[in-house]
Length: 227
Image (cartoon, rainbow, N blue to C red; front, side):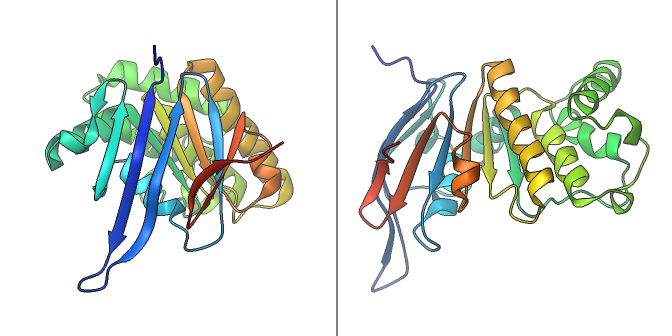
């Protein structure tokens, strides 16, 4: 019996017209609740494409992708958007905080999109900012934060609606070593605490070492890294 929360089978994707370029070929893996994995690979091998397919931002040429029993490839654009909004969280190298909103308002955005009441939203935002060590910055604006603080706000925003799946694409690429260590520890801790699941895409072997399992993506597909 397969108890995986995320199941991917033979996922392939090409881009182009008369001579399409194959980006992904036959990618398969499972992810269970509470599991945190890392995917490494050279630039251009399709790591971001794989995340986009998992997030439902793009559709595969072939293969299947199921999140908690829902087959994403069978959903239309609106259904994929609603599922992404409610069940996934995203952390990127480019932090994308809205500069005209306070820290608390930035973190509250996913809750507003999911129809969470004002009182519950305020409580969750307060709890989440405390978790990432930024309760004192709730009324600050992004321009007043360091890079590491901004990325922790982005992490709080990604987690505040309690997603099933956390997708992190090079989240420490612009951070110094100390800030990167803090963010990576928080990523792992939150996946474990919430019994969700996490996928970290990274070029950094140090970052990948914080995961439960490491995969290497290449033109030949996805393979586990021996540890």
